Length: 444
Image (cartoon, rainbow, N blue to C red; front, side):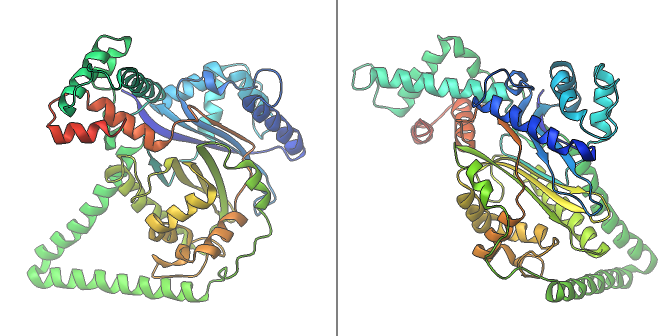
């Protein structure tokens, strides 16, 4: 069964090879866009497991190093995706990574050595949202084909006596059409069900959540065994005091940390030239984590909480009501000054995307990014911050990073269409009332 996941490889670039690498990546993007002649250095459309892929040359870190990010959103398991990359894209990946530190001659000639290089420089996501859980690239393509087939058949017979008036009868006719076509496989359940276990890394999230719950419960049980109700009361009191101390420390930071208050930004405006050319768009965002261990630990805790909700609550296409994200994840980049990398693939314009973020998930975004430098001032971790819309958008633009290469499979299909098409396919099976059949037909 297929799963979904993200791969994020971050590796230092050889200092005197940055310009050469940037030029190579610009050529790759041109070939993928069709704005330059010749085949692309890496033929992403030929890779069956790839939903999205990108290369990004990051700004210099605190120690002056420049890093290359290679990231994919893939159909897994991860081992199978990595094997496909190494087997079918080794020549192109070699041409890119030979500009980076530690890339050996062996890695350029053997799949096993290239695999080791990618795994060695892979960073695990802190939080990940997938808007198409259980749908491989092939599933999305097939289900779009099914929808178009049904619409064409309905259009061809529109206004004729062949189309029944009853929604149940129309649905029955549609099922017959599909049954008698090469698309009849759509009448069977897809290989991977839509559920929490269809995202790579769900076991780590589950184990972490269970460990925390058992730790808290275990403390209460131990307190009860030692001193009964009094022990439990003392345990709960101790937790409350600890939470109060953490809140006081947080409020001190929130009131004293520098915060952006204006709508100016010195960089990022030129990146608008690369946006909003199609249904799907992308964002790469990089910002320093605020100094001190408190903020870094708090950021990790917030990301873990978001990861848990994404895995076990928001796995049916939306993230807290936000329905425009195909795939997005955060990664903490280690270093002298840790940085937070955010990679997103979404539908619509930059302005609308951020507006939806604020309206539907503003508290969650504030909880994450309030731990990073110069974020608009927040309160109690969740309040204000991103809801200061104009300042938040300026802050986001200022910390946006140019994506040298971006590839999207099936770029003309929105995430809403992906999910509607899946609902349409699922509705080809089972019993429906007249009311539910009428609702189902409205997807067409």
